[in-house]
Length: 119
Image (tube, rainbow, N blue to C red; front, side):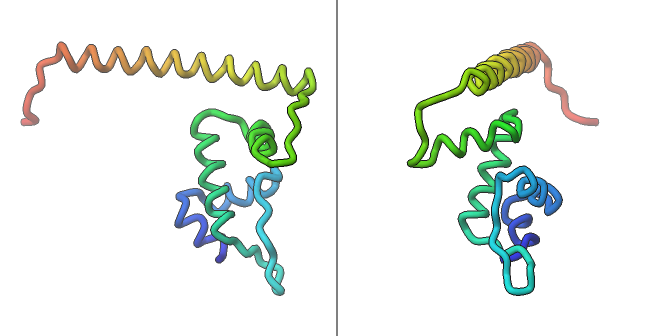
C-alpha cells in the first residue's frame, strides 16, 4: 500500500510518516519504481509510534522501546541510556500528576456547578 493509505488508516499525516522513517523508526519497502511500499506491519508500527508520541515519549526513546521488544535484546544498559530512561520516567510522572490534578479540578467543578440549558 502507499503512504496515503497508511495515513488514512492511522490518522497520521504523510509528512509525519516520512519523519518517522527519517528517525529510523519505520523502514518501508520500496517498489521497482522507488516508491515506498507499506504492509500491515508498517500500519501497526505507525499506530504504535503515534501512541508513544501521544503518551509523551520522545522519538529518540521510541527506538529504545522497540529495540527492547526484539528477541535479541540484551538486559545490558549503559549509564547514559539508564539516565535517559530515568529522566523520561520522571517527566512522565510529572505529566501524569499534572493531568490527574486537572482531572480532579474539572470533576470538582462539574460536581458543584449548576448545569443550565443553552438559551
